[in-house]
Length: 330
Image 1 (tube, rainbow, N blue to C red):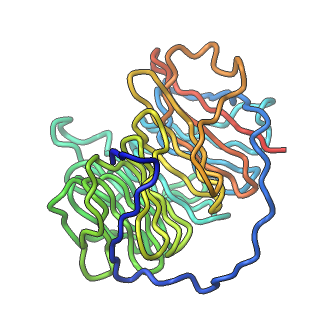
Image 2: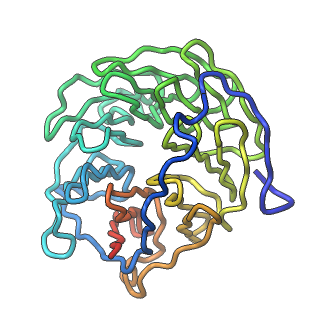
């Protein structure tokens, strides 16, 4: 959304989104800044050109998925030992897991589809090293997914919202507007793209119109949600959306760790930006000098935060290989 000032308040109604149950929670302990960024080596049986999703299970166990199907585990040795590569059987576009549980919902495209002109989208559950369900297939790629519980989640095709029940999926709504990002909560889901829409379990309704296409959405609860797109980030406090100027390049991915620890990444024609919300303002974050010196034309593609606050940043090089960074808080 293009803004004439740094902050714009947008009032919107959204069914199924109530007030916070605790109006006066104890403030969390302050988080320190990322003190250094470390490059994590990636091993793969095949070339992998782009990180599609990063899923921290715990502080010492992080799952990383490449767009063309590679998967890695990090188990606490960021600079000593490389990840172990696996294969997911899916060209991954996004992944979602519940905190502390190595049980992941993967979405993407079936690499064995008969025709690349008619892609087949997939939803699959990956527990540990093995897919425990056969992928559910949909017409067109499945671009994003989000879990609210072990038996409730949502995923998106181009203009369809799909519900995941833990084992299989079903179409629940179609959108007349393009949709690109979804975040599931206990009462339904937020869907972003051409505007912001709310699924309340019965209908998909427009909450806010936006001037620019939104790319991603993430939240912590019914009164704390961020959506990003263009150079703006929009915040839902349970009553209204507030838009903030957040970046100098279009934002494509956002992740929430705490209300005062939100991260987003953007990329445009080789100009990358990592930005952080500290509870008061969005500011750019610089990487450790030299950490990407051997990565020509790096482009950020995924960001995530581990439970303890360490930040994970993935991307691709113009030479078509993936890179992964670990941002350490001390």
